[in-house]
Length: 228
Image 1: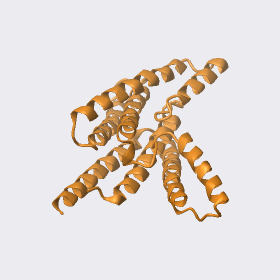
Image 2: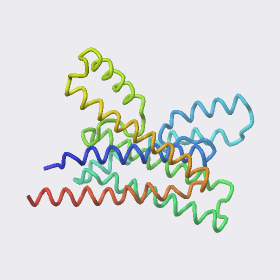
Image 3: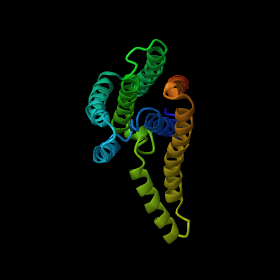
């Protein structure tokens, strides 16, 4: 039996992680979006028009990396009975990203391209999270890496609540769910911006560690529930 609090907890954690990673790479890795990869098309086009960034083309590479991650994530999910195995792999990729960044900057390995290598690893991790959201859509309240759909649903819920004078209990609950995703992502964005400005890409270790702990916490809850 699934713990009803798990979905609230997992949704909040995943949205914070996505917002953190997306903003961290944008701030510390040459304006690369790691979660909203289609946003890189806009940045690429803008930089080409302005003509001041010779590395603008790298942003297009996020798209095939993201696609590969989703494909691999879907394969992992189909081969593993553990629903949350993708989150374990995501945490490993994020931790390796942070460790790789530390090693490359400390020992001057791929010095000029190290931020792009790390950024692509984070893009891959976000691809795995997207695959998890699509494969196991009932495990969260909605998409955890892209907020447009959640904001749209929240807006529709506000309209319904106004028409019912805030007496529709189901709509109120649904609205709270959307707020969980939106504010979780916002918190992650703010933290990612601050950490990226202060310490560069190294803080990517934090979401990797948090997600790893989250995975084991959910696994323990599952084991406890099975014993009851």
